[in-house]
Amino acid sequence: MSRERTDHFDGVRFLNPGGSPGQRFSQVPRMLREPRTRWPARVDQPTRQPAPLNGSAAVVTFIGHSTFLIQTAAGNVLTDPMYSERAGPLNQLGPRRVRPPAVRFDDLPPISTVLLSHNHYDHCDLPTLRKLAKRFDPLVVTPLENGRLVRSAGIRRVEELDWWQQAKMPPLPVTLTPAHHFSARTPFDRNRALWSGFVLAADGARILFAGDTAYGPFFNDVARRLGPIDLALLPIGAYEPRWFMQSVHMNPADAVQAHLDVEAAESIGMHFGTFQMTAEGIDDPLQALEQARQAKNLPASSFRTLDFGESHRIR
Image 1 (cartoon, one colour):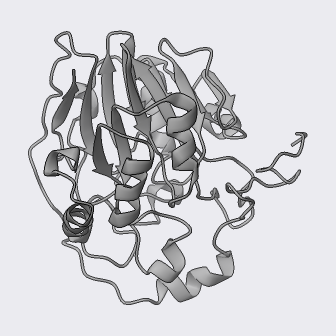
Image 2 (cartoon, one colour):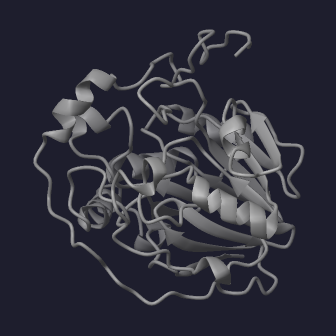
């Protein structure tokens, strides 16, 4: 990699806002020894059809984990598409899916753009990208140094960007936003590729897909630089034990604060109830979100979750 140093790149590896490299890999064995609340082996549910656009600025459908279908008049977008049974190398290792994708792959409408936030297996799933490449030939917008991995799945069109840069190739405006996380596909490539969130504009409505992130003051910068958000898609799961996960993932209280920081008219929770990645129970994020919302005296409609397969209409 030959790239100039910045406040979040030291010449070799990328850094979080403020210069932090994230949680140390040496702490992972201790984290894995933490007691875990048992999840059900499988939660079966019927698949659903996405609601039609019908003149709205956008229709957002929750497929599962961090995968949303965002339908707009300018084209349809998928976020961090993940349709595989396991989130891990060769789809043989890593956590197994508890809930199936709520929209069948064959029921997806034509996809013009994929927003891919970083290279972790539960967000960058090569088998899903191969299927998307074969069926739709979409453009993938992703942070710096993820392009080679994405192209290895047969994706022909990739636009790699740094934080705050606006994409030039998508059919609708997309800007990368900072996130506080890390990247790795193996023990040897930690933070060699960048991570991010995205703000996309659809018929005047601004949608934030925050990607995978811990809480940070950069959420205030999103509203300051890009304007208030109409709909924020914010992670609320995979947050225990807190001593380890605080620098990796938001908990629901963090997500509620991020909702306030970006001045979101509405927010929807994600990154829960699909893969057991950490210690909390499958329904704990939902209960904690309700408590966090009540603590800030926010109405239930301001920050909620969608049922798996449910669609939400913006204007």
